Length: 65
Image (tube, rainbow, N blue to C red):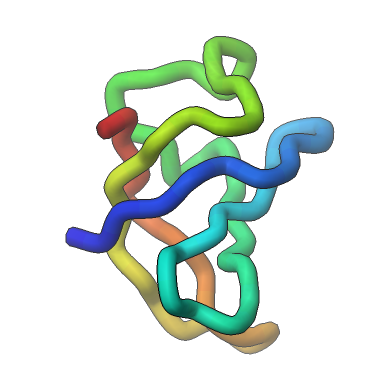
């Protein structure tokens, strides 16, 4: 599992920054486990896995750290 911080939230999706990574990872609310999108705030710590999609890397299987 990777760890990161929410840097932006917007209408059911957002972006997570990973320490040492150049680009932020996209995530969709459908990938949240054990937490609702409306409970998240920018700055929250998350754990997740990284998966390849047609548009690049995404965070999946996301939980609050």
